[in-house]
Image (cartoon, rainbow, N blue to C red; front, side):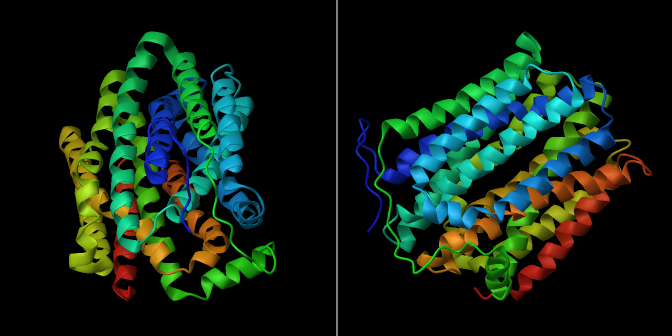
Length: 392
């Protein structure tokens, strides 16, 4: 039985969750430009930024392994609301400190809470659909409108940073995330009750269950690759552009433009699964990202504007990858095992973000800036290779 909700807007549950997800994404997207530049302002090097923010990603991944009993025991709507409020408050506090340790701590709390929020929302969204066809269609809609938030957010973040400074950016981020929590609070979802003999409290058992399924392992890698790409773009490109003389408003515009193809095309590209299958889409898309990475390495020193254009072109590949990653996972798992497996699957997000930050961050201690493109290209190539094992 699907979720049910009474709405003043008379929308079905998935549409309510799309609005909620847009608010969360818009809020965090506002902060994307500001986070690395804030750390530069308080004295961290680009290498230190990559390493320290990568450590936060590791913490998120570890804590994700404790999510199954939370998702199974507690009302997911309440979990979503409470974690959204906590995340919003943490980002507001982030705006009021220039101390490195306190900044890292408040950022960690904010990102961890937002991770819990998005995990609860994803399971709610899946359970609110009545069929595979509806889930596929609504996932494309969710992806497109979420990326509308990611398109507007960096633009808004760059402008806010220019006019109101860093405090304005992170107060706006926290306020939008809290607003998303209030929105869910206004509309009482009736959550799907799943009968269980016992809660999945054993981390080792949950990991063994996930690892034993080869298709779930592939789903993990395909999702990880997406977050490696965005982690690299959001962490290092603002730094490289600032060092090259670009203003913060232009940097915000560039980050926003990376999301435009996703907003324009995701609701259409999700339909390509039925025609071409998961294997072909994953393989071609990741090969494209690998080629773009290696070409960027060759052109970075002399032709940075061309590199920026190539990265924008890479967003076309992401418009195929993003809407089908969760579709692929949920197509390989039963509805009763979703809460058990999803937290392990979603660790791919912080782990991917960590790889995109720590490995290039360490490389920058020894090599020139353009070395990060080689690292991205190697990772994208390996994930493309692993996609050949997908059973479409």
